[in-house]
Image (tube, rainbow, N blue to C red; front, side, top):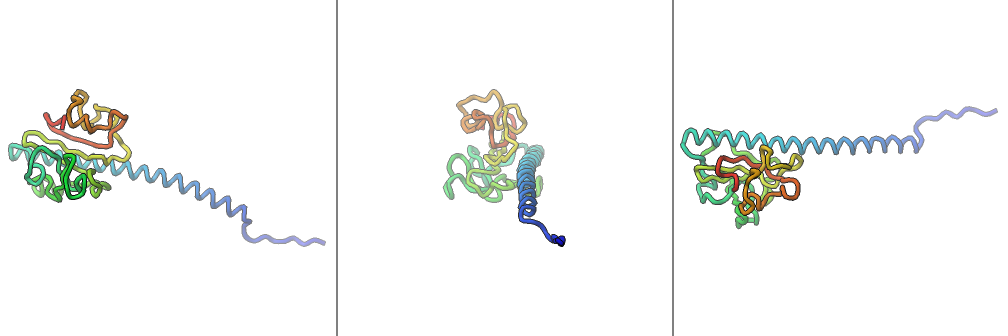
Length: 193
């Protein structure tokens, strides 16, 4: 007479199947979660730029000109809070200005100047500002992670459709290759910067 053997527990095959299913679900969720994080950081960049633009326009309404860029220095370069393009020696028209990269805006018009969610510690990336008093341009340069600019007609495009190819704007834009990983907002006459 045979006696029935009672099984307690799982076989190795059952455990492997469950582990592989959990692994697949985890990887799918991680990819989707990472994409959502990149989208949200791009949205933060756009929102920060809009708030900065509003503060700059309020400054102009009160003072008659746009705030100076670069800690009160020259008006022909972009200044930002992050590191310069090549370490401590600024190059490529991008200069580090620590916390006062837009002169006179904080705290009256905006509580603090924005920082890029991920790229301010990377040379040549993050927020930059340029002004000559009559015009200005704000850049989030080479930091966009997912919501790239794919047309000159998009709101945050660095250059307008009719910008000449000999200017700074089109010379550095990635739109020729299909998309640009920079955002920009600007006043009239600053499109080509």
